[in-house]
Image 1 (cartoon, rainbow, N blue to C red):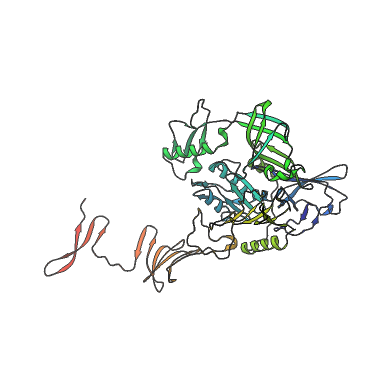
Image 2 (cartoon, one colour):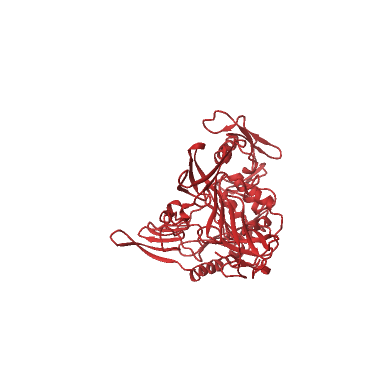
Length: 560
């Protein structure tokens, strides 16, 4: 594609902005697993848009075969003597390095992701999502940039909750347990392997930990190491789990947390980095019919076989270089990532101060959907038939050939789904199946009616959704309880009970008169009826007494 230049205030990236940079000489996007996500492009000083290309402005380009464009902010230019200028730009998500989040606590990874926006100290237009399910406590004790909170530092989400893979998609940050999939692709000498370098590093290898929790007046440790099963030679490291518990844990809790961290850690494996240069067969004319079986994306797992080096291993794609102008990969690197979020954080030295215009979340979602549907750039409708010519599914694709299509809508008796990985899927972005299930990364609705909602975190309100409200009603519509920015109220036949920040806990009659309340460590009431007895200060007791002729109240001492 031809790169598109936008002003620094652009947020939608659906128009041609300031124009297309048709004179671009080269344009490469480098993306690493949980690491660098940058663009480098060369542009001549004689190009018609050269004067418009400035630091802080945004260039939108494709970054992989899906055709989805991503925005990159220009931060550097290097002029050469030959009249060609090299521009460097980082992904829009690098703005998270200049958004600070205040201290907070969370009950799990989903809750922690949900807490980022409401606890941001400056405007945060990003959305956060995860498919990881981990329920251990998280505590942020000091202000931190959002980017460093995500990963790359001690006490970050990746550090506390173990392995995961981020996807940065415009204003959305997704944390997957596994972003990619085992593609089934084999890279073998004599087939598609052109060069290979094997690096093995065991310096960071460990298989045991000595966990500890440290508070102001107490430190909790274990008398022995926590190890993996079937360990012959122990290599241990200390493991600080202070941020995993709000209060001092028991030894059993500390041991379980340490085992979970150890099992999820990449440090338990010897680091083997295989740099394999291979022919990307799915991009060749000869293999176009087999493209769905040969396509590889970032974080996918492939098998590398080279008998002379004794290499037969499954490795992840951890770095890709996408040629924007040619719409193809220049390089795909396999192995263990050499750059982390920590490296990305330290590379960012300029503060981003541009304020971002805000719009209603719902309006933005509607506008985005409208632009994608009404402003689409072509597509192919295919009625897929079986061998006897009977049609059995309906396809909408970015290519007329099923074997070369990348973005595919597929509708058949089993359901409707969208894949950005070709006809064979997976269909993880969106799927509506015949058994009544809807699977989607995100769902934005105006009104949702449901008999049951199950999930990890229910977040109401914040930013464009305003003040959140939750109401509980009987079958006939009578209001029983309401939770909003004024607190919690529970209604009864004679009044209501209220809990909020200003009043604390209090009870009111139907006219709003306060009947009882808690002030500091004291309970106050205007009137009280006690049916049986009252004990004061554990010293005396008022009790009901009666005989044949009289009834009254007696005062007796309370025994030790």
